[in-house]
Length: 306
Ligand SMILES: O=CC(=O)O
Image (tube, helix red, strand yellow):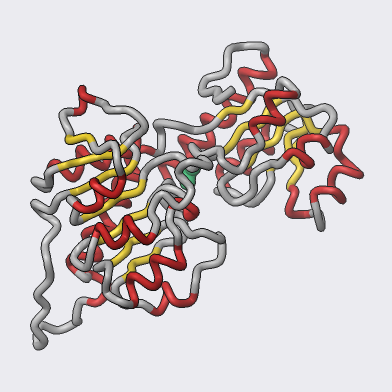
């Protein structure tokens, strides 16, 4: 498959770059000043795009690659890929579900523990009292009980936390308490975790009302997508003490992070690293490659979205 042109949209883990380069004719979009400049020279050579959370593919990009046959994203989320355009052009899209579930759930718990135990603010000597709230037993509310939400619930259960959730439909088999309304979930949660897919309906699902319902003792954890949360409202709520704290791995305008968030004491931030462990980056790379190879060999795709 060395002659098959594959375009990576941005730098990713070195493993995927090296493995793609061994198998395909690899193009790196970041070596060009713009998508249009790339497409003008190489547009006809690209049969596959490997996208990621940092740089997806919009309708114009898809239209500028006339030989495009498949989009494979190195992520579970695909909100930055124009699925409508892909459907229209009969271009299959794959993602990397399952392999990153544990890491993202681990990070959600790590952010909650870090906030409650104030790990990063902990004094280096025991001369000053350092008494913090505990995570164990706190009511955890999860927005989105998909694979990742469910994995977070299982971890939180191990901390003795009662679990509630909001999702499009009730998942009675979970045994967790279902809330058809996010406001009610927030009002009964001490830790509110955003773990749903980003869609027009879930944009700003955490708004001023939800933050106020969560209240001054509640903390918000977002490992979903930045636009799930109205960030300007979150900053105000944190500043005014209307919400107790926030642990955020994702931001509304990535890669930028609001200066106010960086300066707030009741906030723990990580730069969208939910799946960035060595093992998971390799597993994600292998899944991307397996999907591409399946496509070019005419075999069924492993993890198709469409
Ligand atoms: O955010 C990470 C992903 O969608 O894989």
